[in-house]
Image (cartoon, rainbow, N blue to C red; front, side):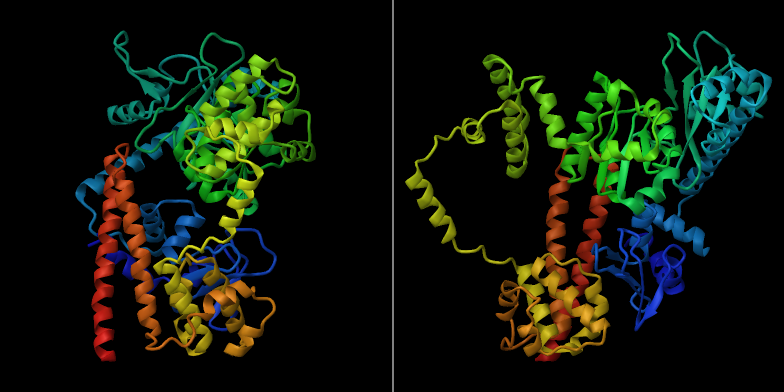
Length: 599
């Protein structure tokens, strides 16, 4: 059994979903539901519905739906376990079945957060002392104003090796925590631990809950030392899963569904203070899959505004690869005159920076230009041949045929070659003559459509029952929980439920005569009308749940076979698989009960 099941059940009993969501989304009553502007996409007409009775929400615009736990996960961009913690803090309901080790871990995390918070305050105070004058002047010389210092909680790590231990930490236990966080370091040469951040501007890294989790320190002016050094991973910080400035940018990203990714903290600060608030920067690591998952949940479009040097180009190339795999739209923003985003923001206003974003290069154009390494329309034949070879090597590993075609077309355009010839060389197929081509086309036209899957047929049967008997809308709460696999059924559900909410009952004849419903959609549903021996609607719902469950279990088994998964990831997948099997067994028992009653 899920160790948090009893907690979840108590939350559902004691927390009203509409009262919780209303804290973030103003809701107005409309019939049995409450409606408001969807927090997951931009809209002017409310399409976000919350049903207090069922405890579910659904948006007819972007199709976002779920229960209270799903809302917390999606709105506050956290995983399932973190959503439980948030709801526990909000409601005062304790998380159950916590072990002594869990409690000790939480206490240690809290101690780490306190150490980090005190360190941030210490660094901030240093900046406004006599010892911090040089650092403050450096910030002013870079165009950082006093208001920026306050907003981003900028501080200063004093020169010297023993400042933190002498001024901040009270005992050996705190020193050990500071070492664990990377604020202090041990050395074989030195008896005492020493300050890691020395003579550096200090930028605190703050998570989405407002807690300091790490620091990034920049050296003052030119130096042989690294320009930036960052906190190492710790119990409270994973550099592959957090961005600098995400705490300030989150609301703007959710609202616009866009995000600008830059390389460094100064870049993020520069754009943010010019009004482009949806800007973040990875720290101490390249762009990772963890970063992609965070952005994918928050934005539909990512602008990469990297430095124009080779390192920036290499980082952008990797980021595009990762984002493309997750289906996120990516644009590459080129900054004129070889400037970095911060320098450009110093001399340009918000409209000019926005224009730069609007003129961004598509991901395919950028990547192919890099792959071709300068080969183009005016290049020598041997340079083009080398470019074609690199292009084929880049495209061949791609899983989707459509992606291959997109990149090959862009490559042909940049090289000034015929796409058909390039494609023939890539596939190794000789060009067919016109007669054969026409014959093949006709064969394709006569091809029998693929038979709909079992889950699609089940969904269409549901829609047919709704149209035939509107009393089945008593199951609308359950239907709101569904994410339809079939586009036809999804269209009809949105259409019918909108009419239902507006108290516009429609007969089968009226539905069939509606001109705003595509004929092919009506045809797909019509074959399921008045079937003999029609099943109870509840039975169809249960069978649909089983079919979707089977699809997900198959997917989980496939994911678990991935040898690169960590033990934690495999455990999470196994837990979900066990839960799905348990739920399916319960449905099977209930289905047998229904079928017995029918007999």
